[in-house]
Image (cartoon, rainbow, N blue to C red; front, side, top):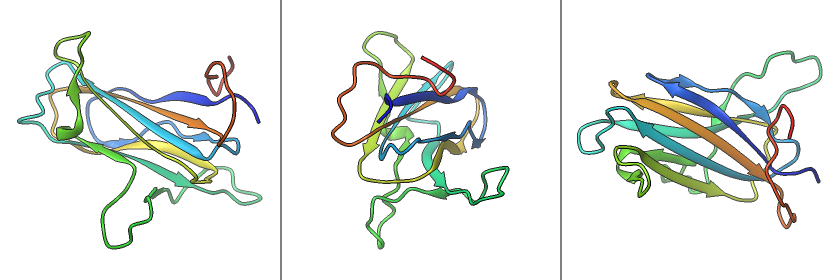
Amino acid sequence: MARPLKWKSHDGATGTGPGREQATKGHDQLGLFVEAYNGFDPANDTLDVRVEGTVTYEGDTVPEDFAPIDRGAPEVDDSVSLKQNELKESDENAGRYVGYVGANSFPIEIVRANVVTHSGGFDVDTTVIVNGTGQASYRFSTPDGP
C-alpha cells in the first residue's frame, strides 16, 4: 500500500464549515490534529472539530453527503472529534493549543475535517492523517505529492 497521507483540511479557519476533503486511497486508520491560536482561550471559547467521511459512486463528480465517523457506540456520541476542553497548550508555543485523536479499522473512501462549532475570535488549523493497518512507513506523503 502507498505511503500514509496527511493534509491540511483547514488553514487559519475563523468560523465553522467543512475543510478540504481527500480520498483515503484505501487507508483505514484516521487521525485528526487540531491547532487553535491567535486568541483561543479554552476556558471561554467553544470549538468542536470532527472527522467526516463519504463514498462516491460511478458517475459522481463531487463528493457529498458526508457523515460523522462514529467509533461504534450507538447510544453515545463517540465521533472522531475534539472539543475545546480537549486541547492543551503547546509546550513549545505559548498561546497555541493542540489536540490529537485517532481511530483505526474504519474503511471510508473520502474524509475531511469539519469545524462544527467555533465561537470566533481565533484561528484553527486542522490536519487529517490516514494510514493503513500494519503498514511499515518511513514518511508521510501529501495528496498532491511527496
